[in-house]
Length: 472
Image (tube, rainbow, N blue to C red):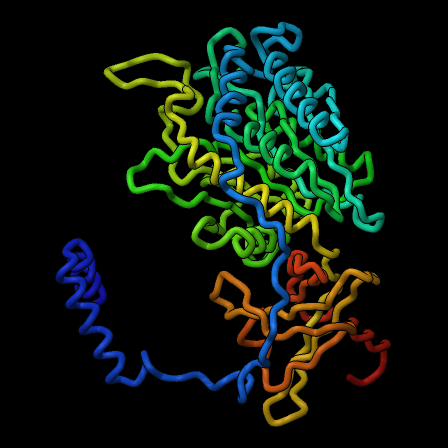
């Protein structure tokens, strides 16, 4: 019986008209059975409190200010290096990965000069080894650091990066051409342009615009940056890895960029997931496609060492990849042109990807520090019971208060339940935490929101074990 029903449904799905008829019949049967239109008890009984939301920060970036020609010239410089394989030359100014590094440093130096010396340029050199073979490898990352203005937050960093190494069809071949226009000169161009857009602003937290090496050999540059941040006492407030963000080859565009984020132990909430939700809220659902997966299936990127460390880190990637134009030595075979070449890029899409990064970075770096120790308890002492939320947050004269967030357990986005101007606890009358997830975030007087911190049940102290010989 089950098999027969499934076969009918499968056949209907292949026939859209039949599927429409079947779905209408199914809906009518559910309605007649009192299932589809059954109402859940209201929570709270009289509705959620009315909330007057503080407007988001002024000064929103203008998409038109993003310079397509500037992005194009950055990518042309990188491609002209011939290859940027991690095993190619670090010293040849015309061919190899060192050529790519030199162009990036020069671009950041120009931005520093134009912004009155506000960016600090760091070339981070380190020795590492390949994970599987143990082969030694010299790598260098480039960081443009814009220090935060708030002494309590300037050791918190928000980062955007691309990786400037490239690879041909055969991994670790320093002699073959590997232009890497999309993978990942597009991410590097985005990071440089974001620095240009934001370098003249003032932010509470620190911003880092990074170009990493060694991505193709096992995310080695990202691990090097992670060590640099730890050694210099930085806390990661959020990290955007931009890898393959320069093309939108499918007709019907512009399409949304994909933002990958991994879940926590429960597969749902995690710092990375909260960074993704915040980014979608800042940039707009029409621009961001949330993908609740740490990365493409079976693949990885520079954000993953940060995710493994429990830090908020996500990956931006174009809507649909063309594998003929990734990790391919340029050539033509059987009428198919292979190679990661500039002519396959879509600069309108890259401009949008740059705005998605820069605007999210801007607002996040203006926000207060997130709360901590957020708990929720179900207290069944009234007929309906209530939820009791508690949290901690440092003193902050620029904080306007706290937003309590909630969502159905099956919903991807938060909604604001209530605004609390001060204090460290709140009572939600007539609300059961069984049916919703809850979170808290801090709101600045400027309207910038911190990342949300999901509420969890408080830890219970273990019951003492009964002593030997006592009754239980």
